[in-house]
Length: 591
Image (cartoon, rainbow, N blue to C red; front, top):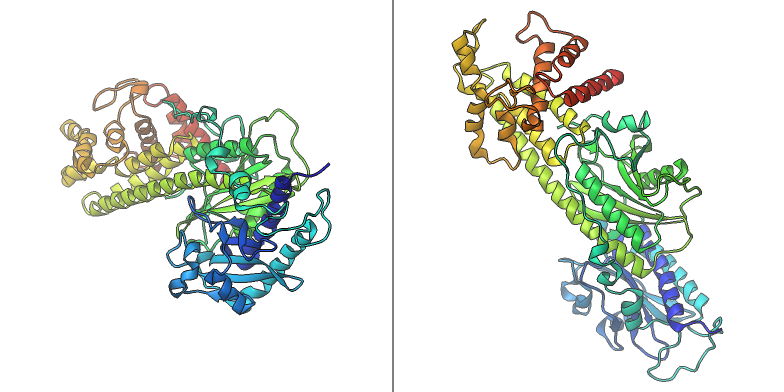
C-alpha cells in the first residue's frame, strides 16, 4: 500500500522538528528555522521552525538568487550576524525582535548544499560566537542530514513510495510544500482549540470561608504530613527551551511559599485544555518568585505514581539549579483520582519559558509517556494556550507589585507615628503577620489576602489621631474609652484618600464588631461582619493577651487560645477560632 505524501511530509517535518529543538538546548538560540532545497530547483522551502512570536512566521520560501543564499554560498560555512542593521537580506526574518542576531549555517549532504539552518536571538540577549556555537550547530546539522537520508529525499529508494523522475518545477513526493506545512501540519491556532462552549467556565470564589485546603481533586507530593502540609508553610511579606537555565534569584535565601488559589484555578483550566487537545500525560507549571520557592503545579487526567511525580521535580531542577530538589514541592490535580496511578517513566517532554523578566521566569513543562515527539500542530496548540497563561501570570505579578507598593505606604504611615504611639508599630506588624497566615490557611482569594494584610497593618492607625497623653494614661476613664472606640472610624476617614484597590477601609472600620452583634461601631453580627474584620479582631485579641498589653502579665499561647475558644460564638466567629487554633498548633509543631 502506498503511503500518503502528506503523511511522509509530516513525518519528515516532525523528525526535523525533533532535531531542530536541540538548537535551544545546545546552542541557546530562542528561534530557529530549517529550509530544504527543492531537488532540481534553487529555491529553499521551510520545513520546521520554532520560537517565532504570535502572529509571525519565518518566510515560507527563499527564492533562488536571494541575497541571503548568495551570501551563504560565498561563506560556505557557519557565519554570525550580530548587527543586522546592514544586512537587508535578513529583514524578512526579523519579526518580533528589535535587535535580532543570527547564526546561519548551510547544510550539506554528500557535498551538495541541501539545507539552510537559521538560528536567532540567544537566550538572555547574548551574542552568537562562531568558535563557541559552530561545533554544536554542525553536530545538529549532521543529525538533520541523517534524517534526510532516512527518508531518502535526495536519491535512493523510498519505502512504500516509488521514486518518480523529478521534472522542472516539481516537488518530490514526501517533501512538504509550504502550503502543506502551514495549512495541514501547522494550522492556525484557532483550528486547534475546541469550540467556546467546550471551555468550562471558571468558578468565582464564593462568600464566607472557602475551603481550608486544596479541593478533593488536588493532591500534594513532598509535603510532610501530606495534605496537612498545605497550610503549614510560612508566607512572608514563549518558547521551548530544553537547555534554558534560570538565573540566580534576587534573594538566595528564599523561603517556602504557596501558589495563590486564583493562579492554581487558572492553570488547572489551561492544563485541562492542553490535555484535551493533544495526548499529554502531565502538564506542570513553575512560577518564579524572587522571595519564595513556590510549589510546582502538575495536572494529569490520571493519577501519577510517586516516581513520575519525582521525575517532574527532577526535570524542573535541571532548569532551576539554584533550587534544591528537596526544597521543591508538588501540588497535583487529577481528573480521575479513583483509578490506579500511572507508572513507568516519561519518554517525551517539552519545556516552554513564559514571562522572562527580572522578576519571573515561569516554566511550563508538558510530559507524555509515549516515545513520540510533539508535532508542529501540537507545539502550536501548547504555545497558544501557554501565551494565555503567560498573560494571566503577568497580570498577577502586576497585581503583586501594586500590593507591595501599598504595603510600603502602610509601613511608612506606621513609622511616622512611632513617636506618638510607640507600641503601635510592633503590635500592628505582629497582628498583620498572623492575619496573613490565617487568611492563607482559609484559602481566601488573593485579593482578600492582600486586603487583610494591609488592613491588619493599618487597623489601629486611627489612634494616631487621638491625644497621645490620653493614650499614655495608666487607666482610661469612661470618656476616654468612648474616644478610643472612635479609632476605627477615624482610621477610615484618615485613609479614604489613599484609594486602596481592595476593601481595606471597610475591614478596618469593622474590626471591633462582635459575632453576637455587641461590638462597634455599627453592631454588625455574624456574616454581616467582613471576613477580614473577623480575622483581625480575633488575632488582635490574641496578640494583646500574649504580649501583656492591657494585662498584668502576658499569657501563654495555650491559655490565650483557651480564652479565644471560650469566646467562640459570642465575640468571635467559631470557624475562624477553629482555623486559628489549628494554625497555631502547626506553628508549635514546626517550632
